[in-house]
Length: 458
Image 1 (cartoon, rainbow, N blue to C red):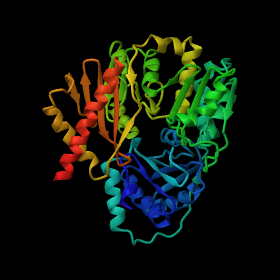
Image 2: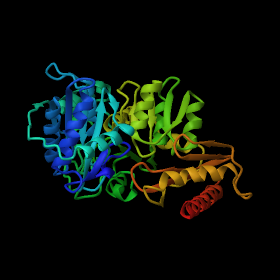
Image 3: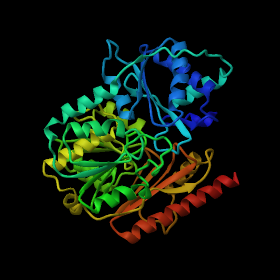
Image 4: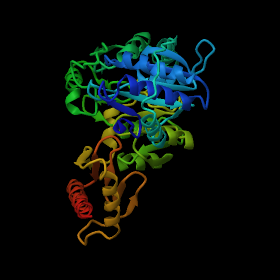
């Protein structure tokens, strides 16, 4: 039970962990939190077969708490976030809940929660979980009272209006919805803007029959890459709930931190927030023209930091992109697609710009297996060991410990952090010299091994 209450959201397997009783209680106790700021909550759900069932359970709990429920049905997560900034039939949501398993396998589901336009996460979620466990015997009757709203139509109209200047963009592109919920909005938007494009796997199907809807995994991009061998020069792929994007050209799979460079160049004196996994190239490039802030990984963390700093933009390597410039500051893969098309229409040669960037050798995210109890203490032990590193350890320029530990060397860096969602340490390494990236990986892995031994001996 406890494991479903995660750092950024609530997530578990249906029906073992997310069952009727649990979800009704989530609705009830979340409803009590929402009542501190107002009583209107908008809810939507993704393409999984059990999402409508969870929507009913959640609605019963919210109604019991005294909330007024606005139901938007099957939508993408960005549409759910968008609802927080709209008024429907005289009602403006004080909160929104998106029922989604995101990029996880089809048996998973969960809830992404926004209260008073702010993400509900971290300690608030853990406290909610503890309260639910204390009151697990409480009975909540079925009550499906809700007002149905067409947030999807409102969102589509907004995008077509905002990007009216892109009408007739003639460069052919391909997009892959992965049978997630992106298809329920992008097709109408692209049609409304008269784009020349082809959609793959646009029908929502929570069994994900064609490939898993996680565009950070290379094998899930094979269909779109095949299309890029032909007439299409740009490709966009979305995760299961369309808050994360992959952007491809014929030559490049452009990660979130490199997209941040491209987007920020079109902004005046930009302030951009990146996470600890972002390339040093991004920080250096943006600092030359504006201000780059390094912060914690996680969509909730970055949204909070945008609100705190008033930054123009934030990015995760994984493709969560947050526009506060001309938009609302949340992660929206569909909006990011239109902003990238805008750059290309304005003359950006993506591949040429990437070719001009300094060459670095970086690893993907590498995972070190551990367990839930040890992952955070392990990182603390690594920090301790770095205070007095082995004699053959590369010279350390700086240590950034905003999220795990990022060790800055003269020509690169290495990262060790605990994943907030799985029982692993996440590592990443980068250098302008390929052999040095490998060396940093070896030396930090040796420290992790030493930290494991120290923990085991206690």
